[in-house]
Length: 123
Image (cartoon, rainbow, N blue to C red; front, side):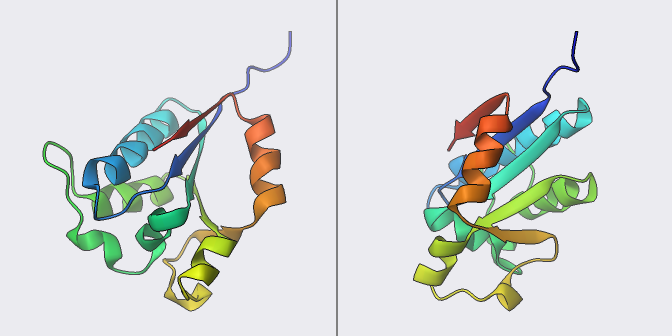
């Protein structure tokens, strides 16, 4: 029997306007990493703002740890943070404005990872 696929992908489409929807994927992604699963968080549409330096410092959903702490923990534990290339271009965000550890990806890479993931959750 082959090795069980333990890759999960969380797609984030919200930012400060919906702090719970921006935060919960990082809570779950950190839990996945703690359970020895591979976790990828993809920032799309409004969610790309979470990939900007210092942006998440002011996003805090009631009942959850501060979002910046969750993002830092996620990256420190080896999580992959992907940012949608067309989405940042549409918002005129440059690669230099992104946090360290964020990778810019386009459609083909995203679809390939989705096909390889055990589950994909969209927030």
